[in-house]
Amino acid sequence: MIMRSLPLFSLTVLLGVLSLTEHAEATESRELRFPPLKDGRLLLSVDTHTHTVFSDGHVWPTVRVWEANKDRLDAMAITEHLEYQPNRDDIPHPDRNRAFELAVKENKQGRERTDLLLISGAEITRKYAPGHVNALFIEDTNPLLTVKLRREETFATARKALKAAKAQQGFMIWNHPAWPRDFPDGVIKISKEQQSLFDEGLIQGIEVANGEYFNDSSLQVALDHDLTIIGASDIHGLIDYDYDINGGSHRTVTLAFANERSVEGIAAALFQKQTVAVYDRQFIGRETELQTLFDSLMRFERLPARRNDSQQTAVRISNAGPIDIELEVLSDVSLNKSAGYVTVPSHGSTIIVVLDHAPSDDMKLTLKWLNSWQAPKTHARIDVGL
Ligand SMILES: [Zn+2]
Ligand SMILES: [Zn+2]
Image 1 (tube, protein in one colour):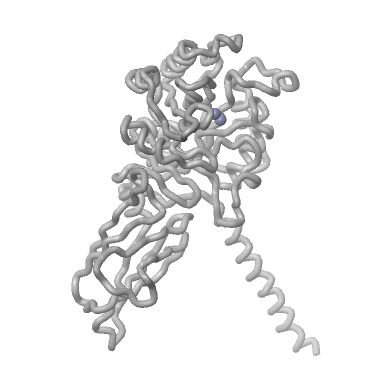
Image 2 (image 1 turned 60 degrees about the vertical axis):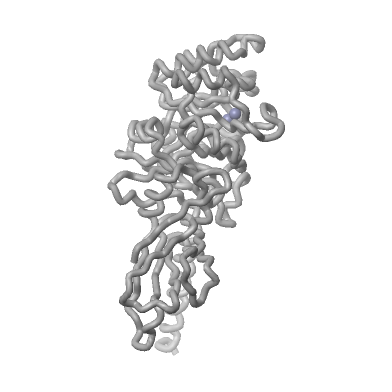
């Protein structure tokens, strides 16, 4: 009896281990880690816009660090409103760098050892123009506070703040540009004042996606005014309350194509417009960066033909990234097992079978990358030679 029960016991242990493995895989799906680009650069996920109780957020800075680690971000900025401080009576903090310092402390000495990079920043808060503007990579945010009273919150004092940020080699992003408070119809109109900020290099980037919003008009502004394309969470509450993480969604972030894994490397990528925004399983970027990204994430292999399949070619499409890739096959080929729409799962692969195609022939596939946007209502087109 004892001998017989042993294998059963082992089976139970094995099953237990198996279900643990599955669970681990399920929780990993939220992790926003990408493989390096083919040209050797790194693909770093960055949230450029977050809040804590030190402005109008609802959590202590340590919680932001924990969440960022749960999402396995490469980097996160803390960007409190400089002028809007609704918790000031409860949490007085004349030093506007305090939230960032607490996050840094948690990152260094906290409960987890991780490789998260933290970026200092601040949100300069005005009505349009210029609207809300994040300044990143600055040593000291205090000089960016250029007002004491509400009535001083003008374009002139905002410009002064932006100049103070530029003096510290700051990178400035126009946040949620299509905000209904500024543009009730959702269509952005660039004023003379705003244009002057672009011209003087006082605003270099634009959030095409902010939290749960992606606005076509802001992507058009990015393209028309040669601004860096940014996506960010602008999280005030909890990531797990605002996003359907279990349903496969993720916070809105920017992918920075960086030469090195450092805050300086990310800054250089942003200044050089080497970015793609990632919003609700969709990629938003310029054509060149989307092509580079696709080329690095995706692999196409022709599989050896089976003996009687002289008229069919099987192609395995693999996706090394953490987000499913949706494709439409545009080439004039017939497909077996699919109607031309293909989902390539994250960290996985799928096989398409091209009919009427001898396995020895060269093959060219033209694809539409359905969860990418290189301009309003325009997906990236991909050519693959096989
Ligand atoms: Zn804002
Ligand atoms: Zn904000």
